[in-house]
Length: 309
Image 1 (cartoon, rainbow, N blue to C red):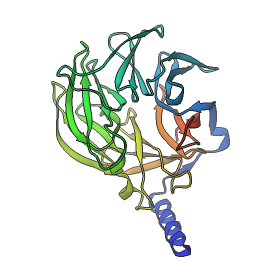
Image 2 (image 1 turned 135 degrees about the vertical axis):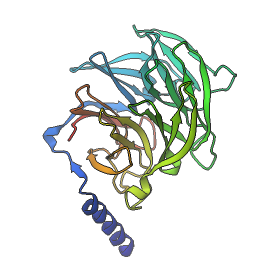
Image 3 (image 1 turned 45 degrees about the vertical axis):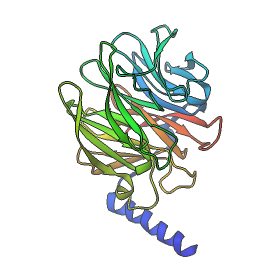
């Protein structure tokens, strides 16, 4: 055991030295916006508010700069992400009920989307990525995490039509469109990596390939389970993670990479799970959805605001 610990320590030190990338946040640079979040996930900044879901509360919550307020809730949904749509509604991925929830601008529950135009169901809806045309890609993770590879990617057009665009994605999770609209990045959590697709003018996907392996990026110090991903105005990708163990190497770390997959820096949070995040409009702040309780209900955690540097 001592040898294993020493080897792990050496790998971690090598990661820090070689990258020079670990940024430990100073206490005065981290604010707790919600100290009793129940599996906060899938955040966005929209019209002066932070919107995020709380999976174990079956809710969409907002933070307006001073307080957190339940905006919408629906038992059995199991929300994983929230996003505004081109039709003036909000959508949420209902992971447990296998639907895309629809919410009015006022927070009223509307009839959900239950399948695509060809009748394909949504198994484990997970995360959203808007494009430049009023459309939204979303992932469906598939069956429970494990060896089965049955995740999918769908596209919701501005007119409300939903089409299946990719299959056989392993635990499809976070998703984001490049700033030029030509590449779709998708996280395969169980394979510890991001893959990418070329986006055609009709929103179809092709030329699937591996973009980045997080285990390789971190010197194989332990398995990294990437979760959410966001992109800034420079094209830098912010990758959150949800480790299986609170003591996992690099737990609480968000990785920031460039368009070539080179590690630029990291952001370190006090909580071990940091599955997803959102950037403030000026990109000076990162809003981080965090977990302290990784493996059982109510999945207690926090919502942080951290300086982006």
